[in-house]
Length: 143
Image (cartoon, rainbow, N blue to C red; front, side):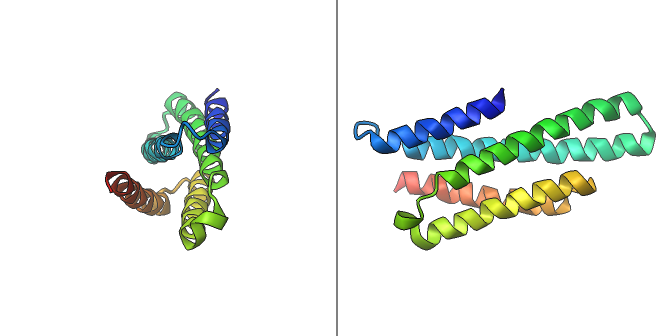
């Protein structure tokens, strides 16, 4: 269901790009996607930590529920990253678009590695880098 939400947001972004009376909305949509990705990555970090604790204490039922949450957050974050990468305009954005694409790709790779390895150390670095970009994105709106 959330995947559909992210795809709808991407479609809205594409429609807005063609509509002249909604000039502020692309910024807002990207901001929503960035904030959502940050939130989901944070929840994923917490769930991986919980999973590791449950593995140690052998709490199988809690482990099963936590794994479901992790799978959900991985799917949502990857869909959000795809939406962000698809929204980049390399012709107009130049090196900024390339750098953002690389950051999103770094986040994507760390999410997949964290899921596969059950270790979120590198995911935390990607999360921190993403939040720096979110801060810069907010500065753009202020100026």
